[in-house]
Image (tube, rainbow, N blue to C red; front, top):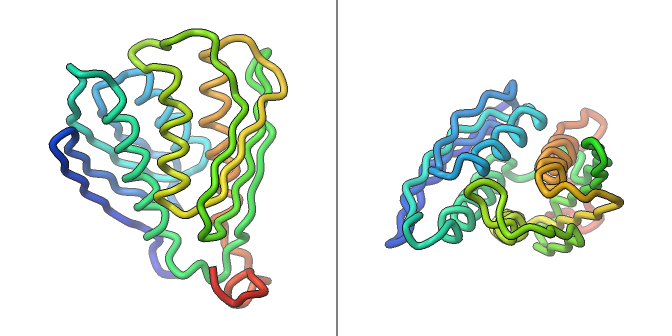
Length: 196
């Protein structure tokens, strides 16, 4: 099996990012974005999806966390799109219903090639650590559109903002792991169109 690994470098006036993603990893994470809570979320995503991820970002955090988080989402989406390749033999769809204490969040993923993002997860605090809570949505939006994936989140219950954010990242990890998994029963691309 060919390695499903991609490295993306993204440099703008606002951020300088290097990201390497291995879809068939063991959950190893090396992450340094300057936003400790965001690093914690990326670590949870990596470990629970069993991906290997190395991410460094030097961003304009003196402004705020927006450019750093959004651009990391863009870079992760680009790496995902490259690493999954022509999508031959993948499961394509994945979902996860993930509990974390009082929070319960579900995530569904379709590696369709058609970007779409929907989330009804509601945060009631403006920040968690150094991360603006509105940036959770922006991160996943950026991943979805950069990777060309259909991505949905549903909040079934929950009141603790930390738990809601962490449940979202972990549910995404599990759903993405399922969607990118290779199924020996699948020949070619899992689509009636013959292309994704």
